[in-house]
Image 1 (cartoon, helix red, strand yellow):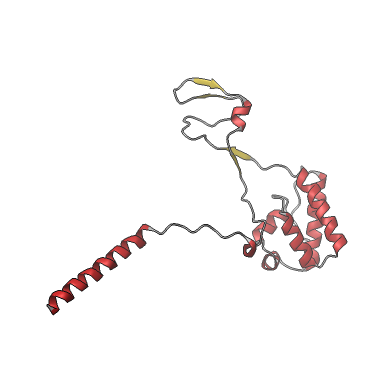
Image 2: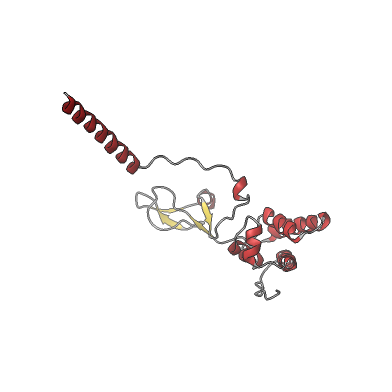
Length: 184
């Protein structure tokens, strides 16, 4: 089972130790990543990211792996502590700044010169640029199983449904008028 790809050399020691321990725990289960995904709320690809140190696992994923592996309470608590230390030391993913609404021109970076809406050159402060939202390059994984997730907001009815309803009402009215004329 131990045919793992090597971990990146630049990983902090806390992260390396945690991922190595997580790999050993996964191997102890005897399950493939597909089977592990079926027994937890996390997919095969999520487990690949966690076990190859490309993304930190949510705490609930570690708890789920401990449960599947049948660890005792003390060992599960040690994994919780290792997780906390690893997450604090985990290298942050690359972030990409988003464009502020209505802004033209190029991207916004800390202290870079850029043109404002009127075409004048500005030298923005770092604080101004940090106000802009950023998003993480890797996808967020759910921290709750699907059955515990809050319900989604209902989507508004589609236009197509409205058109079908109007056509049906028109056909009903037309049928009623024709029926009334035929009887009368």
